[in-house]
Length: 125
Image (cartoon, rainbow, N blue to C red; front, side, top):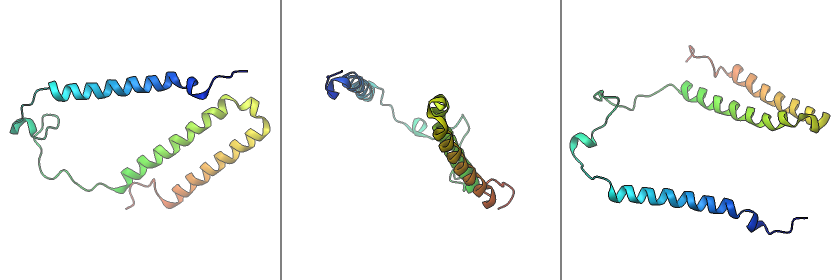
């Protein structure tokens, strides 16, 4: 039986986080102090692919773009939750299978709800 304390078990992770955080802090501080500070109108001007900016950049976008992105992320994350089940489905037995079928049924109900609401219809405003 392992009798080590939980702090000792997490010591390598703590050290790694401290080293990574220290590296980021030192690098940001060094570039801020040592970097060039030449501010002029041309340098502070907005630059987009070499094209001069014209007009207001705050053009209203259709909510459909954001809705499609949110729905993609939602269903993409839900699929990630299926991966551990797929790896260990033989050991979970029939209970695990029933749980995954119910999980997928809830996802399917959500997808049908989205279709019924017309969230994926691009031509209708």
